[in-house]
Length: 253
Image 1 (cartoon, rainbow, N blue to C red):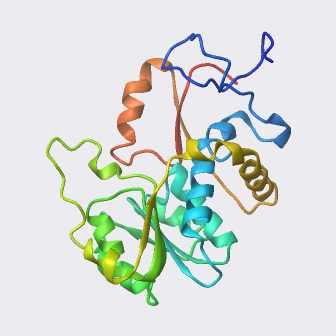
Image 2: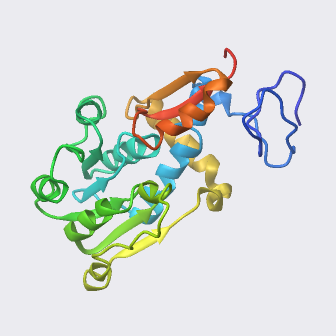
């Protein structure tokens, strides 16, 4: 099903100029959706799909509810924020700089943003979510998760997408200190892996492309030029230096 010169999203691969990839699981980007190529590695790729299924299938936000999103200026979090707004929810994001917070409340139009590096997280969540939190889209873990658990309403939902604060820990990390809130508030906490939704990718891509075309969805890519810079680029994920979907460009489009 592939011809010489086709652009392909490979099933497997590494950081290399050339790879041999299995045909099974590889795909051509759905260019008929009319988006530029980087979109198929971001809003119309795995990150957009992750936000879509995590928020809508597990979070199930309803109009008027409050949705809190950690790592809200990241590739997944920023899409989750906007999808929650499209669903009619009130949305508050947590990010790591004033610039990112301004982007969230400005271009993305969410209702509030918290700079966790300069503000007291628990206090700001209470201030911006006076009616509590119904859905918490979790990307971070650690103290951020505890702060969110304290603010959750009864029968709240927590799509567990990532725990990036623990990924590079060199000692065992404690679980959430407020784990008991899951029982007392009857919370649903569900982890998920985007590959489980493979049969529904077309559904999600059509919906995301529709929102994109209608101007309801915005995305940002942070491009580092040159394969030789890939290791340094990866490090930016763990410092919060990136804005939006971080990519390494290996050749001109």
